[in-house]
Length: 321
Image 1 (tube, rainbow, N blue to C red):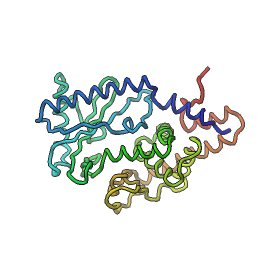
Image 2: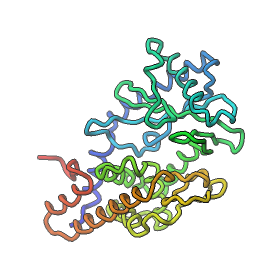
Image 3: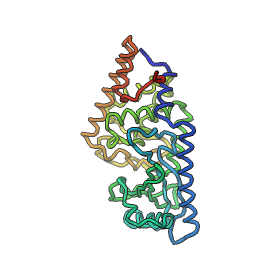
Image 4: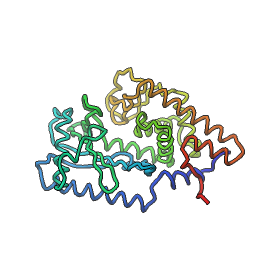
């Protein structure tokens, strides 16, 4: 049986998304943190920070509600007043961010702020949030662009955090189901344990690409099946690019080529190897088969079992009795 729009929307809104009160509580913590960091910057020019902006899934409105012991990751972009020659000097950039944190948290030691798993940020725990501060070096031109160190070191890439946010806003304007589709796919990816292989940003771009190819789906279930079918059928072998991005696509032999919507030089999936690609395509193929089968069985229990195979035991379409 097919799920109704209301049933699937119930799962998205009540299991995957934040309720207004829950969201406001987190946002208050984030706002307080940004206020404290900004106050320190304004009071101490030695910190060499020009501004701090919120980014990532929370800012885009595509974040998943934490569950199973997970924390909510918040991304802050820290603009540093250094020369462009310093853009690949991760140690120096880290030092400047640690200076900022130590200025705000006077009782803490520098050792309390180790480099995060993302390498180019600083991760620390505050009031139930994991916050990653990503250092960037602004450039004069193009306007709004910054150099950001590569994850794992080895260089820096030119991108526009503000442009990426604007890109996602445009997708949400084009399709009111866009954020829900991204959340569904992120949950399915987590259940398949592919979080370390297929990034949230890459998923956002795949959903946007399918939206550009086929337009908004008439139903949320149909939109989900379209994306899974695209991944399974294409094998993600075709480059994905977006109009409006600066420069030209880099020549690369990477198995997956999904490019930053603000700069065609940046393949955001460059770290996915052949084994990772096979795992992603196998996941999409199996999920597609399960959900197609779910549409063709008569019993509600069998349908829900198929959906739980894709999304995990937390999948539900109504309040538990």
